[in-house]
Length: 464
Image (cartoon, rainbow, N blue to C red; front, top):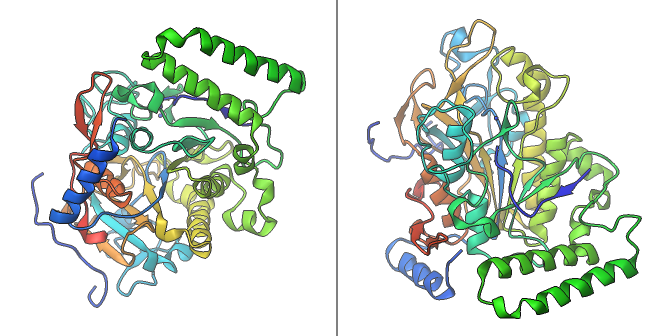
């Protein structure tokens, strides 16, 4: 079942020297064309060239991936720190990753790893807000926080919608297969347009892309809506719009008219429906990604960027019948969850996506971001799990102008705290937009026309 909404639903230090560890021999509305051109000229003159990526695929790995079993294993640490798994060599000389990543290890030459990401927040919704917006939640460490002021900064998807025109019948930013939420269906803040206004909300599309049969309410006519009735509705809409000629200066009316016309375009057109039709993919391709909801959402993301969508956020969803609800929030039976479900799924679909994009000539122009709200505690708890940890964790980026085969940042011997190369969420967002061609000081305007930069961070130059 696929449900289309035209608005997003919201969701469960000091300064060190900025030195890169390159793993080689040793060892992430309101912008006018004029202002965009000026910003790009300024960047080219004083801060180096901007990226040329056309699209971003952003993973929302709810619960956060554990640094110890993925990008920053500590094989020499005590067992209660290192965990139950070993390490394996990767395609990058000197870089070892967790043994549950055999496919990813072979493609590390296309991946940049950040090993000292710091949010300083150990709560899902507040740390998640910071990861999606670049702005610390007020207050920090607030679980089940709701999307409301003052925590009303726009998500990356919303900023993309404000910066880029929609892709024909589809918006420039889409979230699948559902929003991110805490227990009780409390939506995280930072998933919509916030102060930019609802017209810039990413489209949230609830879907089950792993099912063989797709139903498109909102993208297809129901059985009781014959074509003649649909045409009558279009005529009625046009008549209503004519009646609003005197209100042409009203932004609200303009927004309504735009959204209504787009809805009719989706109903009457075929290109948008085609983008969601995974039956057009071969069985071999679908099997290569894996048949889970998340994996098939990754395949859907590839199809969407092919149609011109600028940012697709793919959120990890809960899975019935698994420990920890099938998510990355592994407070109990951590190793069992990783081995039986989490890492095999992630290792397969992440590499399938990179391989698929590369074979289609799309990887250089598509940035793929492995993102979670935090990492996991260094020490395994009494329930054989790891808890929340925002003091130092690992993320990864690939494609879209990212320099593969690099590692930036160093954590301590327990992967607990950063030693060097600290990266803040705001820096990741600055880097994403750099790859899309926008410097961090690119201005957006809120509903009161106040200018605000897309990021207060720095571009992570060590990986671009």
